[in-house]
Amino acid sequence: MNRLFLIGPMGSGKTTVGRYLAKRLGLDFLDLDQEIERRCGVEVSRIFDIEGEEGFRSRETAMLDELSQRDGILLATGGGSILRERNRSILRSRGLVVWLNTSVDQQLKRLERDQRRPLLQAPDRRERLEGLAAARNPLYGECAHLVVKSANISPAQMAARAERQINSHLEENA
Image (cartoon, rainbow, N blue to C red; front, top):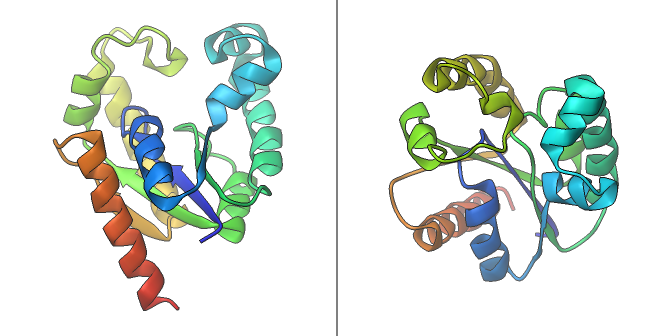
């Protein structure tokens, strides 16, 4: 396996679990949002403030196109990276796409102190996350080659679970 892409909602563990998983699989870890921030010199929330969501999504597509061509990587994508059909096509055609599927309850618990994410700035976080899940889960499902159900276990244990499922998937599809 040369390229692995993690998709899923905010708080699903794409970055945290992804770091562990990359190490287990001998891949370089990259986080799409962090790479955008590094390149732009400002946080994603600032890009949203200045350029709006559409401006951010354009930057996201360009960075995804660039990074997804690298070999030997595990790329943690942003929760909304699957919104554009072009992004879903890039992901599916260039590597193995793994959806870290999590519940809204888990998201709320993991994100309770988070003040940085622009789409989480809402009076009712549960309502916002449920709305995002309703809109995005079908797109995650369309894009993913494999679904790993998130659980209330440590990130290291989640990475081990994901590795077992990935290896099983690769053996079945060899």
